[in-house]
Length: 96
Image (cartoon, rainbow, N blue to C red; front, side, top):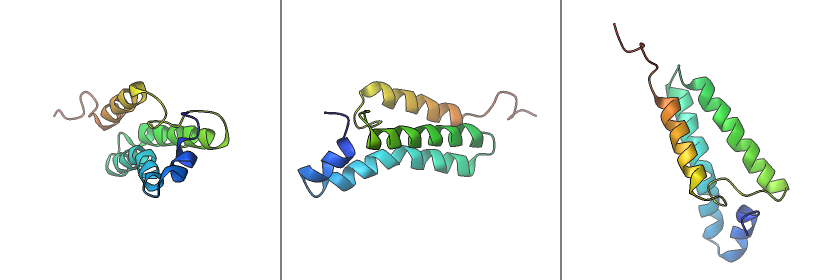
């Protein structure tokens, strides 16, 4: 069942709960560091953090899959591309 991965992970073993929390918080932490260090990518990174937080809250209160833990590889690829887009230098900014 992919809906309650975060809450069910605490029932399996003592180490799987913290591991699930770490896995769910790894991507927002990377986005937060990107927003902190980049002036051009700050707004997209904060928007992705808001999206991520909304998906996590939705998975805790309803029957929705947990992002990165309950979905397949498409979420991993999508957020990897989003991280690359946020950290990319805009065209024409590095010239001159």
